[in-house]
Length: 70
Image 1: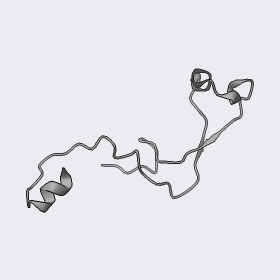
Image 2: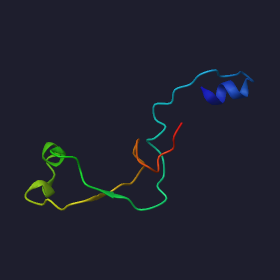
Image 3: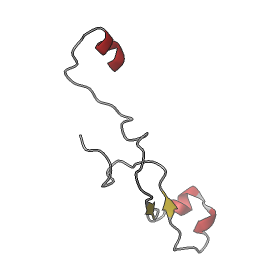
């Protein structure tokens, strides 16, 4: 839609992009712990007694300090 408007020379006054943070690339390796109870909910193997497991992010999360701000 944005490309079509641009090609037609139209102006956009307002736009909301729901997927803006889903495809962001990280510039550094970031590791995080899952929130309380999420490992059990997802039935991950690490949930069986492993409390010190961390996961490497593959893409930017909305709200992360490196995420773009609009």
